[in-house]
Image 1 (cartoon, rainbow, N blue to C red):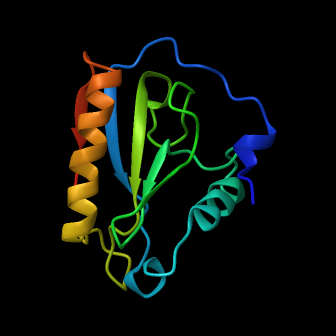
Image 2 (image 1 turned 90 degrees about the horizontal axis):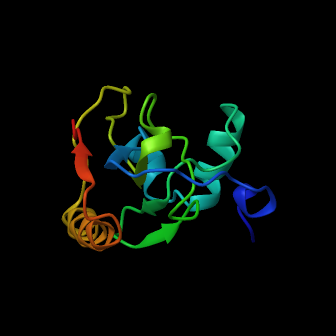
Image 3 (image 1 turned 90 degrees about the vertical axis):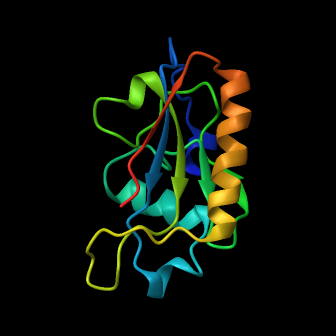
Length: 131
């Protein structure tokens, strides 16, 4: 299967100032089975071209590509054009209240992805606001 961003040309970023780590705000009852295609469809329903993250970290710590590394994302108001984004499945409790739900496996993957991105974008500052 392909993501929506595979079918449409996305614009390249002119600069990368931030590595943004963002939770998907997915309830625990849904998060475990969440896939990159679910996030792609959700972002499309919200009026985006498709998945807005460049990488998506699933609950078990595996990660999958979203948008191309050097393209403009759709993940953080005011940061989309100047950041590369890691989406992390989770981030709310069953009532929808924001909270840190990141698993140890997700945390390890986030650290590894940040290290990788810092090689690609050495001047980028990490912007993470876990709940």
